[in-house]
Image (cartoon, rainbow, N blue to C red):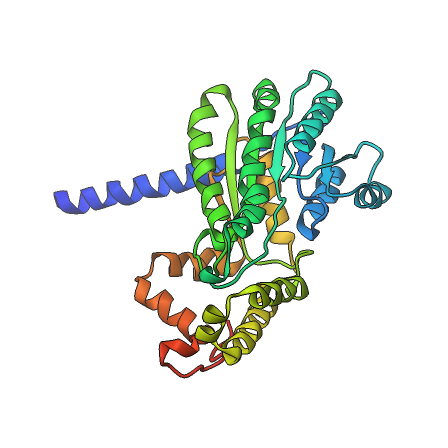
Length: 333
């Protein structure tokens, strides 16, 4: 064989060996889940609720954070006796502190094996010049700052158990396409997770991000439309006239259509990825759950900006003052 042929064989064999090694390594699981505590936020959402029930069945000692006591009671009624619930308001530091005390007492010196951050607030979402700084705070305080605060306060327990942190974000962590704090929070979680992973890996704590498709949750199109109408009604006449009534009508239709088309009712892929991040001896840094998270949104995030801009221009109308006709919803994803 020629030297170049031998080199190609060596390279291919090395790549194949690395793939086989990764597959074998990826299959290793943590054994004996008895006594391992997992704290899940956002269990008042469809996704968080389903995660709590699933991990409870798998044998974890689940501590589920819910927004209200009633939601906590409903979750306990259809779970094992080992599942505990605690009320948590991410926008309230005192509520976060009380939840941390509850988790500390429940774990009883064993430490916290897993922290799954699934809580989120989504609205308001609207054109940027419709918003005020308070509208950004209402989302960022829950999705980003609340997540950071509770993670920091639980780090001592996570270090003690050499546990792992799993942060759930949806496709808006790949591509920003609606004004408001939601996209900012998801991009912020990406950054926080990357830095946290590198800083605490020396203590045996692992951090994973589960990027998933859009799934049906408690924040539905009705709530989004209500907030959109509230924002529209409070706009100064100058801004409202620059957009026009037809724009508002078409934008509302586009938003409703997007929520309907993008939201998926099958959350099993997210649950499987989260379970792997908790059970794998060597969890992955990033997971992609859902075909659009793996391909469409990821591709669009790396594609030229002109391509993504064109897509969103086709999805949403143009303001009256732009001089363009208001096309309405030309395409549905």
